[in-house]
Image 1: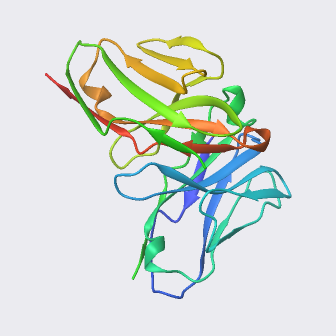
Image 2 (image 1 turned 90 degrees about the vertical axis):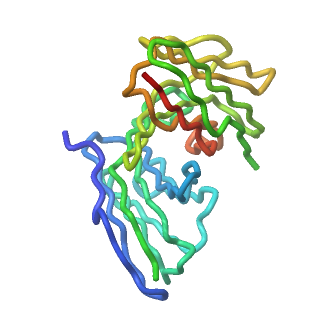
Length: 115
Length: 111
C-alpha cells in the first residue's frame, strides 16, 4: 500500500493563479480531510469528506474548493491564490471518523508558496 | 468555536518521564487525539481517548477527563528520537469528521 500520496511536493504560484493539489489513498478509507499548517502552528481543517460525493467545510474553507468523485481521490483547488495561502498542506484519510479512535493517516504534504 | 491550550515547549532528559497537558473548549465533543510530528514531516497518530481514563500504548499513555475538559500525553523512558512536536486535537462535529488541533508542544530530549 502506498498509503496517502500528495502531489506536487513543492509549488510556487503567483498571486491570482489557480491550481489543484492532488491527494489519493489506496486504503479504501471513507473519510478524507485537507489541512493547512502555518509555521509554529497546529493543523487547521480546510474541508473534509465522509464519502464519495459528500464534502463539508472545515474551519478555514475560504478560497478553497473540493470535490470527491471517487473514494480514492480528494483534490483541493485554490481558486485565486493569495500570499496568505502560503503554507504546508496535508491530506489525511481514515477508515471512519476519528471519533471512534480510528487512525488518521497523513500524506507527506505539499509546500506551497504564493508570491 | 473550538479552542485548545497546550504548553509551547517542554525539555527533558533521556530516560525520564514527561507529561504534556492539553485543555480544551469545544462543542459536539467526541474525543481527544494525540499526534507526533518531526521537523518537516507529516503528523503521525499516537492515541485517542473517547472515554475518561488512561489509554496505554507502549511507552506512551494518554488520559482524558471529559468533566474537566482536560487530557495529557505521558511519555516514558524518553529517547532522543522522541524529540518532536506533539499536538492534541479534539474530534467533533457531525459523524466525528472534524479535528481541531492545538498549536503543539515542542519536546526536546537531552542526553
